[in-house]
Image 1 (cartoon, rainbow, N blue to C red):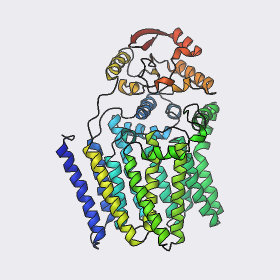
Image 2 (tube, rainbow, N blue to C red):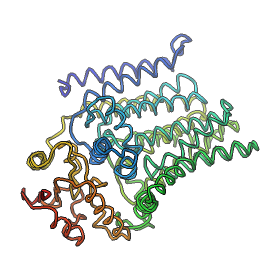
Image 3 (tube, one colour):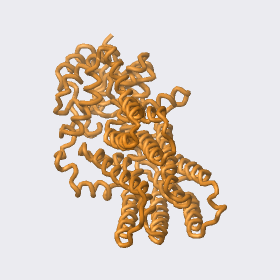
Image 4 (cartoon, rainbow, N blue to C red):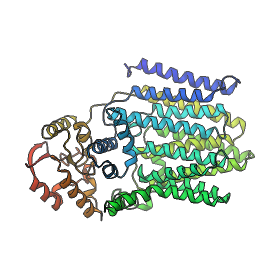
Length: 538
Protein backbone atom coordinates (compact mmCIF):
# COMPACT_ATOMS: atom_id res chain seq x y z
CA UNK A 1 0.00 0.00 0.00
CA UNK A 2 2.78 2.46 0.88
CA UNK A 3 4.05 2.34 -2.71
CA UNK A 4 0.60 3.06 -4.11
CA UNK A 5 0.54 6.35 -6.02
CA UNK A 6 -2.55 7.62 -4.21
CA UNK A 7 -1.10 6.83 -0.77
CA UNK A 8 2.04 8.77 -1.64
CA UNK A 9 -0.13 11.57 -3.00
CA UNK A 10 -1.88 11.80 0.39
CA UNK A 11 1.49 12.01 2.14
CA UNK A 12 2.59 14.73 -0.24
CA UNK A 13 -0.67 16.61 0.43
CA UNK A 14 0.23 16.69 4.13
CA UNK A 15 3.65 18.14 3.30
CA UNK A 16 2.04 20.65 0.95
CA UNK A 17 -0.42 21.73 3.64
CA UNK A 18 2.40 22.39 6.13
CA UNK A 19 4.36 24.33 3.52
CA UNK A 20 1.29 26.42 2.67
CA UNK A 21 0.60 27.10 6.37
CA UNK A 22 4.19 28.17 7.03
CA UNK A 23 4.19 30.45 3.99
CA UNK A 24 0.90 32.03 5.02
CA UNK A 25 2.12 32.52 8.60
CA UNK A 26 5.27 34.19 7.31
CA UNK A 27 3.50 36.51 4.87
CA UNK A 28 0.70 37.37 7.30
CA UNK A 29 2.22 36.97 10.77
CA UNK A 30 -0.10 36.40 13.69
CA UNK A 31 1.11 36.78 17.27
CA UNK A 32 -0.60 33.54 18.32
CA UNK A 33 0.45 31.41 15.32
CA UNK A 34 4.11 30.93 16.39
CA UNK A 35 3.74 31.27 20.15
CA UNK A 36 5.47 27.92 20.80
CA UNK A 37 7.89 27.20 17.92
CA UNK A 38 9.51 24.22 19.70
CA UNK A 39 6.13 22.46 19.48
CA UNK A 40 6.16 22.85 15.69
CA UNK A 41 9.78 21.69 15.46
CA UNK A 42 8.98 18.52 17.42
CA UNK A 43 5.99 17.95 15.13
CA UNK A 44 8.21 18.32 12.06
CA UNK A 45 10.68 15.79 13.51
CA UNK A 46 7.97 13.24 14.32
CA UNK A 47 6.49 13.53 10.81
CA UNK A 48 9.98 13.20 9.28
CA UNK A 49 10.58 10.01 11.26
CA UNK A 50 7.22 8.51 10.30
CA UNK A 51 7.66 9.13 6.56
CA UNK A 52 11.14 7.62 6.50
CA UNK A 53 10.07 4.72 8.74
CA UNK A 54 7.30 3.78 6.30
CA UNK A 55 9.86 3.04 3.58
CA UNK A 56 12.53 1.24 5.59
CA UNK A 57 13.33 -2.32 4.48
CA UNK A 58 15.32 -5.15 6.07
CA UNK A 59 17.90 -5.18 3.30
CA UNK A 60 21.48 -4.03 2.98
CA UNK A 61 21.19 -0.60 1.37
CA UNK A 62 24.84 0.30 1.96
CA UNK A 63 27.82 -1.99 2.46
CA UNK A 64 29.14 0.13 5.34
CA UNK A 65 26.08 -0.66 7.46
CA UNK A 66 26.95 -4.36 7.25
CA UNK A 67 30.45 -3.52 8.52
CA UNK A 68 29.05 -1.79 11.61
CA UNK A 69 26.48 -4.54 12.24
CA UNK A 70 29.24 -7.15 11.92
CA UNK A 71 31.24 -5.21 14.47
CA UNK A 72 28.24 -5.09 16.81
CA UNK A 73 27.77 -8.88 16.66
CA UNK A 74 31.48 -9.34 17.33
CA UNK A 75 31.62 -6.94 20.30
CA UNK A 76 28.67 -8.79 21.82
CA UNK A 77 30.47 -12.13 21.33
CA UNK A 78 33.95 -11.77 22.82
CA UNK A 79 34.45 -11.33 26.59
CA UNK A 80 37.16 -8.66 26.23
CA UNK A 81 34.56 -6.11 25.09
CA UNK A 82 36.76 -2.98 25.27
CA UNK A 83 39.57 -4.55 23.23
CA UNK A 84 37.02 -5.86 20.75
CA UNK A 85 35.24 -2.50 20.51
CA UNK A 86 38.51 -0.71 19.77
CA UNK A 87 39.92 -3.28 17.33
CA UNK A 88 37.00 -5.01 15.58
CA UNK A 89 35.14 -1.88 14.45
CA UNK A 90 37.29 -0.64 11.55
CA UNK A 91 38.83 2.05 13.81
CA UNK A 92 35.41 3.62 14.41
CA UNK A 93 34.36 2.31 17.84
CA UNK A 94 31.93 5.17 18.48
CA UNK A 95 30.11 4.36 15.24
CA UNK A 96 29.48 0.80 16.42
CA UNK A 97 28.85 1.64 20.10
CA UNK A 98 25.26 2.98 19.59
CA UNK A 99 24.33 -0.30 17.87
CA UNK A 100 25.87 -2.29 20.74
CA UNK A 101 24.01 -0.24 23.36
CA UNK A 102 20.66 -0.68 21.60
CA UNK A 103 21.28 -4.42 21.23
CA UNK A 104 21.93 -4.60 25.00
CA UNK A 105 18.31 -3.51 25.49
CA UNK A 106 17.24 -6.83 23.98
CA UNK A 107 16.39 -5.32 20.60
CA UNK A 108 17.36 -7.30 17.50
CA UNK A 109 19.46 -4.73 15.65
CA UNK A 110 19.35 -5.27 11.91
CA UNK A 111 19.16 -2.97 8.91
CA UNK A 112 15.83 -1.33 9.83
CA UNK A 113 16.72 -0.71 13.48
CA UNK A 114 20.14 0.64 12.55
CA UNK A 115 18.54 3.00 10.03
CA UNK A 116 16.16 4.16 12.77
CA UNK A 117 19.16 4.92 15.00
CA UNK A 118 20.79 6.93 12.22
CA UNK A 119 17.54 8.78 11.59
CA UNK A 120 17.25 9.66 15.29
CA UNK A 121 20.75 11.14 15.05
CA UNK A 122 19.55 13.26 12.12
CA UNK A 123 16.50 14.44 14.06
CA UNK A 124 18.72 15.46 16.98
CA UNK A 125 20.98 17.25 14.50
CA UNK A 126 17.94 19.12 13.15
CA UNK A 127 16.97 20.25 16.64
CA UNK A 128 20.47 21.64 17.26
CA UNK A 129 20.31 23.36 13.87
CA UNK A 130 17.05 24.98 14.98
CA UNK A 131 18.72 26.14 18.20
CA UNK A 132 21.50 27.72 16.09
CA UNK A 133 18.97 29.52 13.90
CA UNK A 134 17.19 30.71 17.03
CA UNK A 135 20.32 32.68 17.92
CA UNK A 136 19.98 35.10 15.00
CA UNK A 137 16.72 34.50 13.09
CA UNK A 138 13.05 35.17 13.75
CA UNK A 139 10.80 32.26 14.77
CA UNK A 140 9.00 32.19 11.41
CA UNK A 141 12.26 32.19 9.44
CA UNK A 142 13.77 29.46 11.61
CA UNK A 143 10.72 27.25 11.17
CA UNK A 144 10.76 27.66 7.38
CA UNK A 145 14.43 26.66 7.18
CA UNK A 146 13.96 23.73 9.56
CA UNK A 147 10.94 22.50 7.63
CA UNK A 148 12.95 22.59 4.40
CA UNK A 149 15.72 20.63 6.12
CA UNK A 150 13.17 18.09 7.39
CA UNK A 151 11.86 17.66 3.85
CA UNK A 152 15.41 16.87 2.75
CA UNK A 153 15.90 14.25 5.48
CA UNK A 154 12.42 12.77 5.30
CA UNK A 155 12.11 12.31 1.55
CA UNK A 156 15.66 11.63 0.37
CA UNK A 157 15.67 7.87 -0.07
CA UNK A 158 19.11 7.43 -1.65
CA UNK A 159 20.57 4.41 0.14
CA UNK A 160 23.95 6.08 0.54
CA UNK A 161 22.24 8.67 2.74
CA UNK A 162 19.61 6.67 4.59
CA UNK A 163 21.64 3.61 5.64
CA UNK A 164 23.29 3.74 9.05
CA UNK A 165 26.81 5.08 8.70
CA UNK A 166 29.46 6.99 10.61
CA UNK A 167 28.49 10.35 9.07
CA UNK A 168 25.20 10.50 10.98
CA UNK A 169 26.71 10.54 14.47
CA UNK A 170 29.58 12.68 13.18
CA UNK A 171 27.23 15.36 11.85
CA UNK A 172 25.24 15.30 15.10
CA UNK A 173 28.38 15.85 17.20
CA UNK A 174 29.65 18.56 14.85
CA UNK A 175 26.30 20.39 14.84
CA UNK A 176 26.00 20.17 18.64
CA UNK A 177 29.52 21.58 18.99
CA UNK A 178 28.73 24.34 16.48
CA UNK A 179 25.74 25.33 18.59
CA UNK A 180 27.93 25.23 21.70
CA UNK A 181 30.52 27.48 20.06
CA UNK A 182 28.03 30.02 18.69
CA UNK A 183 26.05 30.15 21.95
CA UNK A 184 29.34 30.67 23.81
CA UNK A 185 30.10 33.62 21.53
CA UNK A 186 26.57 34.83 22.28
CA UNK A 187 27.33 34.82 26.00
CA UNK A 188 24.87 32.05 26.91
CA UNK A 189 27.44 29.97 28.82
CA UNK A 190 31.03 30.30 30.03
CA UNK A 191 31.61 27.55 32.61
CA UNK A 192 34.75 25.40 32.67
CA UNK A 193 32.99 22.02 33.09
CA UNK A 194 31.14 22.78 29.86
CA UNK A 195 34.46 23.50 28.14
CA UNK A 196 35.85 20.18 29.37
CA UNK A 197 32.84 18.33 27.93
CA UNK A 198 33.21 20.30 24.69
CA UNK A 199 36.87 19.30 24.46
CA UNK A 200 36.12 15.63 25.12
CA UNK A 201 33.40 15.72 22.45
CA UNK A 202 35.82 17.18 19.91
CA UNK A 203 38.58 14.75 20.91
CA UNK A 204 36.17 11.84 20.41
CA UNK A 205 35.26 12.78 16.84
CA UNK A 206 38.19 10.85 15.40
CA UNK A 207 36.80 7.64 16.96
CA UNK A 208 33.57 8.07 15.03
CA UNK A 209 35.42 8.74 11.78
CA UNK A 210 38.92 9.95 10.95
CA UNK A 211 37.45 12.26 8.34
CA UNK A 212 36.04 14.42 11.18
CA UNK A 213 39.48 15.69 12.17
CA UNK A 214 39.53 18.90 10.03
CA UNK A 215 36.08 19.98 11.25
CA UNK A 216 36.90 19.13 14.85
CA UNK A 217 40.13 21.13 14.74
CA UNK A 218 38.35 24.06 13.06
CA UNK A 219 35.51 24.33 15.59
CA UNK A 220 37.83 23.80 18.57
CA UNK A 221 40.27 26.42 17.28
CA UNK A 222 37.43 28.90 16.79
CA UNK A 223 36.32 28.43 20.41
CA UNK A 224 39.91 28.52 21.67
CA UNK A 225 40.51 31.87 19.92
CA UNK A 226 37.36 33.25 21.52
CA UNK A 227 38.59 32.12 24.95
CA UNK A 228 42.08 33.54 24.41
CA UNK A 229 40.65 36.89 23.32
CA UNK A 230 38.92 36.98 26.71
CA UNK A 231 42.25 36.05 28.38
CA UNK A 232 40.72 33.03 30.12
CA UNK A 233 43.96 31.06 30.28
CA UNK A 234 42.69 28.37 32.66
CA UNK A 235 39.63 27.77 30.47
CA UNK A 236 41.86 27.44 27.40
CA UNK A 237 43.95 24.82 29.18
CA UNK A 238 40.83 22.88 30.23
CA UNK A 239 39.56 22.87 26.63
CA UNK A 240 42.89 21.55 25.31
CA UNK A 241 43.09 18.86 28.00
CA UNK A 242 39.53 17.77 27.19
CA UNK A 243 40.42 17.47 23.50
CA UNK A 244 43.49 15.33 24.19
CA UNK A 245 41.93 13.20 26.95
CA UNK A 246 40.21 10.51 24.78
CA UNK A 247 43.39 9.81 22.80
CA UNK A 248 45.59 9.83 25.93
CA UNK A 249 43.33 7.31 27.68
CA UNK A 250 43.13 5.04 24.63
CA UNK A 251 46.92 5.16 24.18
CA UNK A 252 47.38 4.26 27.85
CA UNK A 253 45.04 1.32 27.36
CA UNK A 254 46.94 0.04 24.31
CA UNK A 255 50.24 0.57 26.13
CA UNK A 256 48.95 -1.50 29.05
CA UNK A 257 48.18 -4.28 26.54
CA UNK A 258 51.66 -4.03 25.00
CA UNK A 259 50.05 -3.08 21.67
CA UNK A 260 50.68 0.63 21.23
CA UNK A 261 51.75 0.32 17.57
CA UNK A 262 48.50 -1.48 16.74
CA UNK A 263 46.69 1.72 17.69
CA UNK A 264 48.92 3.96 15.55
CA UNK A 265 48.88 1.62 12.55
CA UNK A 266 45.12 1.15 12.53
CA UNK A 267 43.90 4.53 13.77
CA UNK A 268 46.41 6.90 12.21
CA UNK A 269 48.69 5.51 9.52
CA UNK A 270 45.96 3.48 7.84
CA UNK A 271 43.78 6.57 7.31
CA UNK A 272 46.72 8.84 6.61
CA UNK A 273 47.70 6.65 3.64
CA UNK A 274 44.03 6.40 2.64
CA UNK A 275 43.63 10.18 2.45
CA UNK A 276 47.04 11.45 1.41
CA UNK A 277 48.26 8.82 -1.06
CA UNK A 278 46.90 7.09 -4.15
CA UNK A 279 46.95 3.60 -2.63
CA UNK A 280 43.12 3.47 -2.55
CA UNK A 281 42.01 6.24 -4.92
CA UNK A 282 43.83 6.67 -8.22
CA UNK A 283 42.89 10.38 -8.40
CA UNK A 284 46.18 12.34 -8.20
CA UNK A 285 46.54 14.45 -5.06
CA UNK A 286 46.70 17.65 -7.11
CA UNK A 287 43.44 16.88 -8.94
CA UNK A 288 41.35 16.18 -5.84
CA UNK A 289 40.49 19.87 -5.39
CA UNK A 290 39.89 20.53 -9.05
CA UNK A 291 36.93 22.94 -9.39
CA UNK A 292 35.34 20.84 -12.14
CA UNK A 293 35.51 17.74 -9.92
CA UNK A 294 33.98 19.68 -7.01
CA UNK A 295 31.15 20.98 -9.20
CA UNK A 296 30.38 17.56 -10.63
CA UNK A 297 30.49 15.88 -7.25
CA UNK A 298 28.04 18.32 -5.65
CA UNK A 299 25.64 19.06 -8.50
CA UNK A 300 25.65 15.97 -10.74
CA UNK A 301 25.10 13.01 -8.42
CA UNK A 302 21.98 11.79 -6.57
CA UNK A 303 18.97 13.67 -5.20
CA UNK A 304 20.71 16.11 -2.86
CA UNK A 305 22.00 18.03 -5.87
CA UNK A 306 18.62 19.79 -6.11
CA UNK A 307 18.83 20.91 -2.48
CA UNK A 308 22.35 22.24 -3.03
CA UNK A 309 21.21 23.96 -6.22
CA UNK A 310 18.33 25.69 -4.42
CA UNK A 311 20.65 26.78 -1.60
CA UNK A 312 23.20 28.06 -4.13
CA UNK A 313 20.55 30.19 -5.87
CA UNK A 314 19.44 31.69 -2.55
CA UNK A 315 23.02 32.38 -1.46
CA UNK A 316 23.80 33.98 -4.83
CA UNK A 317 20.72 36.23 -4.64
CA UNK A 318 21.61 37.25 -1.10
CA UNK A 319 25.21 38.08 -2.01
CA UNK A 320 24.15 40.09 -5.08
CA UNK A 321 21.55 41.98 -3.03
CA UNK A 322 24.14 42.83 -0.40
CA UNK A 323 26.58 44.05 -3.03
CA UNK A 324 23.94 46.29 -4.64
CA UNK A 325 22.42 47.53 -1.39
CA UNK A 326 24.81 46.98 1.47
CA UNK A 327 23.05 46.17 4.73
CA UNK A 328 24.51 47.23 8.08
CA UNK A 329 25.89 44.18 9.90
CA UNK A 330 26.89 43.78 13.52
CA UNK A 331 30.14 42.20 14.76
CA UNK A 332 28.06 39.19 15.85
CA UNK A 333 26.61 38.73 12.35
CA UNK A 334 30.07 39.00 10.82
CA UNK A 335 31.38 36.35 13.21
CA UNK A 336 28.54 33.98 12.30
CA UNK A 337 29.03 34.70 8.59
CA UNK A 338 32.78 34.03 8.45
CA UNK A 339 32.52 31.00 10.73
CA UNK A 340 29.84 29.33 8.59
CA UNK A 341 31.63 30.20 5.32
CA UNK A 342 34.92 28.74 6.56
CA UNK A 343 33.04 25.73 7.90
CA UNK A 344 31.82 24.92 4.38
CA UNK A 345 35.38 25.11 3.01
CA UNK A 346 36.72 22.89 5.81
CA UNK A 347 33.99 20.30 5.12
CA UNK A 348 34.77 20.44 1.40
CA UNK A 349 38.42 19.80 2.17
CA UNK A 350 37.53 16.83 4.37
CA UNK A 351 35.29 15.16 1.80
CA UNK A 352 37.58 15.79 -1.19
CA UNK A 353 40.97 14.95 0.31
CA UNK A 354 40.73 11.17 -0.09
CA UNK A 355 39.88 11.42 -3.80
CA UNK A 356 36.80 9.18 -3.43
CA UNK A 357 33.42 10.43 -4.64
CA UNK A 358 31.25 8.45 -2.24
CA UNK A 359 27.80 10.02 -2.01
CA UNK A 360 27.56 9.75 1.75
CA UNK A 361 30.53 12.12 2.10
CA UNK A 362 28.17 14.92 1.03
CA UNK A 363 26.19 14.45 4.23
CA UNK A 364 28.85 16.63 5.85
CA UNK A 365 27.68 19.55 3.70
CA UNK A 366 23.97 19.43 4.53
CA UNK A 367 24.18 21.35 7.81
CA UNK A 368 26.90 23.90 6.87
CA UNK A 369 25.15 24.80 3.60
CA UNK A 370 21.77 25.17 5.34
CA UNK A 371 23.38 27.23 8.11
CA UNK A 372 25.12 29.53 5.62
CA UNK A 373 21.86 29.91 3.70
CA UNK A 374 20.16 31.07 6.90
CA UNK A 375 22.94 33.54 7.65
CA UNK A 376 22.86 35.00 4.13
CA UNK A 377 19.08 35.44 4.45
CA UNK A 378 19.49 37.16 7.82
CA UNK A 379 21.79 39.86 6.45
CA UNK A 380 19.84 40.45 3.22
CA UNK A 381 17.33 43.28 2.60
CA UNK A 382 13.77 42.49 3.79
CA UNK A 383 12.33 42.05 0.29
CA UNK A 384 15.14 39.64 -0.66
CA UNK A 385 14.59 37.70 2.56
CA UNK A 386 10.94 37.22 1.69
CA UNK A 387 11.54 35.94 -1.83
CA UNK A 388 14.45 33.72 -0.76
CA UNK A 389 12.42 32.07 2.00
CA UNK A 390 9.44 31.51 -0.27
CA UNK A 391 11.73 30.03 -2.92
CA UNK A 392 13.29 27.77 -0.27
CA UNK A 393 9.83 26.59 0.81
CA UNK A 394 8.49 25.98 -2.69
CA UNK A 395 11.63 24.36 -4.12
CA UNK A 396 12.04 22.12 -1.05
CA UNK A 397 8.44 20.96 -1.32
CA UNK A 398 8.70 20.28 -5.06
CA UNK A 399 11.90 18.26 -4.53
CA UNK A 400 10.24 16.34 -1.68
CA UNK A 401 7.21 15.60 -3.85
CA UNK A 402 9.40 14.29 -6.65
CA UNK A 403 11.36 12.08 -4.26
CA UNK A 404 8.24 10.75 -2.58
CA UNK A 405 6.15 10.09 -5.66
CA UNK A 406 9.02 8.34 -7.48
CA UNK A 407 9.92 6.12 -4.51
CA UNK A 408 9.74 2.43 -5.42
CA UNK A 409 10.32 -0.80 -3.57
CA UNK A 410 13.91 -2.00 -3.53
CA UNK A 411 14.79 -4.64 -6.09
CA UNK A 412 16.16 -8.00 -5.06
CA UNK A 413 19.90 -7.69 -4.45
CA UNK A 414 22.31 -8.97 -7.07
CA UNK A 415 23.73 -12.39 -6.11
CA UNK A 416 20.94 -12.89 -3.55
CA UNK A 417 20.60 -16.55 -4.53
CA UNK A 418 24.35 -17.10 -4.08
CA UNK A 419 24.17 -15.33 -0.71
CA UNK A 420 21.54 -17.80 0.45
CA UNK A 421 23.69 -20.78 -0.50
CA UNK A 422 26.76 -19.42 1.28
CA UNK A 423 24.82 -18.42 4.40
CA UNK A 424 23.27 -21.88 4.53
CA UNK A 425 26.75 -23.43 4.34
CA UNK A 426 28.12 -21.15 7.08
CA UNK A 427 25.23 -22.02 9.37
CA UNK A 428 25.57 -25.72 8.60
CA UNK A 429 29.28 -25.81 9.40
CA UNK A 430 29.38 -23.53 12.44
CA UNK A 431 27.41 -22.91 15.62
CA UNK A 432 25.84 -19.51 16.29
CA UNK A 433 28.52 -18.72 18.90
CA UNK A 434 31.47 -19.64 16.65
CA UNK A 435 33.35 -16.92 14.73
CA UNK A 436 33.93 -17.12 10.98
CA UNK A 437 36.14 -15.25 8.50
CA UNK A 438 34.90 -13.84 5.19
CA UNK A 439 37.89 -13.04 2.99
CA UNK A 440 36.86 -10.44 0.43
CA UNK A 441 34.21 -7.76 0.78
CA UNK A 442 30.75 -9.20 1.42
CA UNK A 443 30.16 -8.07 5.01
CA UNK A 444 26.44 -8.82 4.95
CA UNK A 445 27.31 -12.53 5.21
CA UNK A 446 28.28 -11.96 8.86
CA UNK A 447 25.04 -10.11 9.49
CA UNK A 448 22.67 -12.51 7.77
CA UNK A 449 24.42 -15.63 9.05
CA UNK A 450 24.46 -14.06 12.55
CA UNK A 451 28.11 -14.96 13.15
CA UNK A 452 30.86 -12.92 14.87
CA UNK A 453 34.03 -12.01 13.01
CA UNK A 454 37.08 -14.20 13.52
CA UNK A 455 39.38 -11.45 12.24
CA UNK A 456 39.24 -7.81 13.28
CA UNK A 457 38.25 -6.50 9.83
CA UNK A 458 34.99 -7.46 8.19
CA UNK A 459 36.63 -7.21 4.76
CA UNK A 460 40.13 -7.72 3.39
CA UNK A 461 40.50 -5.35 0.42
CA UNK A 462 43.50 -3.65 2.06
CA UNK A 463 45.66 -6.74 1.51
CA UNK A 464 45.58 -6.01 -2.22
CA UNK A 465 46.84 -2.43 -1.80
CA UNK A 466 50.42 -1.30 -2.26
CA UNK A 467 50.79 -0.39 1.39
CA UNK A 468 53.71 -0.56 3.79
CA UNK A 469 51.20 -1.66 6.45
CA UNK A 470 50.60 -5.09 4.85
CA UNK A 471 53.16 -6.87 7.12
CA UNK A 472 51.37 -5.46 10.19
CA UNK A 473 47.95 -6.43 8.83
CA UNK A 474 49.21 -9.93 8.09
CA UNK A 475 50.51 -10.29 11.64
CA UNK A 476 47.21 -9.04 13.06
CA UNK A 477 45.28 -11.48 10.87
CA UNK A 478 47.32 -14.50 11.91
CA UNK A 479 47.23 -13.51 15.58
CA UNK A 480 43.45 -13.08 15.45
CA UNK A 481 42.64 -16.40 13.82
CA UNK A 482 45.11 -18.25 16.06
CA UNK A 483 43.37 -16.80 19.09
CA UNK A 484 39.74 -16.93 17.87
CA UNK A 485 39.96 -20.19 15.87
CA UNK A 486 37.16 -19.35 13.42
CA UNK A 487 35.28 -22.50 12.48
CA UNK A 488 34.70 -21.46 8.85
CA UNK A 489 36.87 -19.51 6.40
CA UNK A 490 35.12 -18.21 3.27
CA UNK A 491 36.98 -16.71 0.31
CA UNK A 492 34.48 -14.58 -1.65
CA UNK A 493 36.91 -12.93 -4.07
CA UNK A 494 35.26 -15.03 -6.81
CA UNK A 495 32.99 -15.07 -8.78
CA UNK A 496 33.76 -11.78 -10.48
CA UNK A 497 31.59 -8.97 -9.16
CA UNK A 498 30.40 -10.82 -6.07
CA UNK A 499 32.53 -8.80 -3.66
CA UNK A 500 32.43 -5.02 -3.47
CA UNK A 501 35.33 -3.48 -5.40
CA UNK A 502 36.12 -6.96 -6.68
CA UNK A 503 38.76 -5.67 -9.09
CA UNK A 504 41.08 -4.59 -6.28
CA UNK A 505 40.64 -7.74 -4.18
CA UNK A 506 43.24 -10.44 -3.85
CA UNK A 507 42.48 -14.11 -2.97
CA UNK A 508 43.89 -15.28 0.36
CA UNK A 509 46.24 -17.73 -1.35
CA UNK A 510 48.15 -14.81 -2.90
CA UNK A 511 49.57 -14.07 0.55
CA UNK A 512 51.98 -16.92 1.44
CA UNK A 513 51.70 -16.74 5.24
CA UNK A 514 47.90 -16.73 5.19
CA UNK A 515 47.75 -19.41 2.48
CA UNK A 516 50.04 -21.67 4.53
CA UNK A 517 47.98 -21.21 7.69
CA UNK A 518 44.68 -21.95 5.93
CA UNK A 519 46.14 -25.02 4.19
CA UNK A 520 47.46 -26.33 7.51
CA UNK A 521 44.38 -25.82 9.70
CA UNK A 522 41.44 -25.81 7.25
CA UNK A 523 39.94 -28.17 4.69
CA UNK A 524 38.11 -27.07 1.54
CA UNK A 525 34.56 -28.42 1.92
CA UNK A 526 32.62 -26.57 -0.78
CA UNK A 527 33.10 -24.49 -3.90
CA UNK A 528 29.87 -22.63 -4.64
CA UNK A 529 30.11 -20.84 -7.99
CA UNK A 530 33.70 -19.88 -7.24
CA UNK A 531 33.24 -19.08 -3.54
CA UNK A 532 35.56 -21.37 -1.58
CA UNK A 533 34.40 -22.49 1.86
CA UNK A 534 36.89 -24.03 4.29
CA UNK A 535 36.16 -25.73 7.59
CA UNK A 536 38.63 -25.87 10.47
CA UNK A 537 40.17 -29.29 10.94
CA UNK A 538 39.37 -31.14 14.20
